[in-house]
Amino acid sequence: MSQQKIKHLTLSALFAALIFIATAYLPRFSLGSSGYIHIGDAFIYIAASFLPLPYAIIAAAIGGSLADILTGYAIWAPFTFVIKALLVISFTNKKPTLLGKRNLIACIVALPITTFGYYFAQAAIEANFVTPLANLIPNLVQAVCSAVIYIAVALALDKAKIKERLG
Image 1: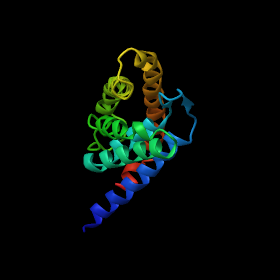
Image 2: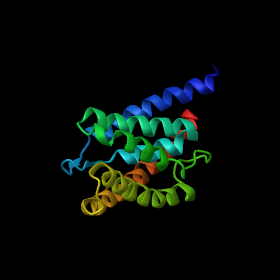
Image 3: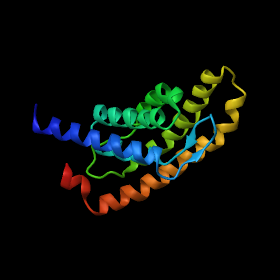
Image 4: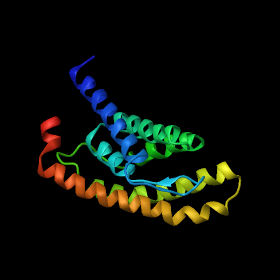
């Protein structure tokens, strides 16, 4: 296995752990049985801006799903696995910095993926399309807060030239 693959696998595992911690334990607000609002998506966006696509998908899907499984929301894990994997697709790691025009646009693309992804997940879990309407705004707030945190952290990491140092 090449040094580059080992580096990417190692960083993927570290990002998966960071995503798990940020999702499961950093400030989060319960929506009862309907899930929770968290800031873990900000770290998914960072992983997607840092890692090549397959590695970012793995980190996002595993980190987010693991948070569901280990915090009492295991029924959501299969949906989370897919939704978190989809979040990373519009981001790019091919620029010298984490934050760029494409990744700013990707934050906007992530809003409906999160909001409607979890709407349809809850509709499938509860077998109705009315109850999940109550969580559209909280899921949108989660996506917006994650985007704001991502932008702030990405700016700080870009200023410190982290991507250049680890890349």
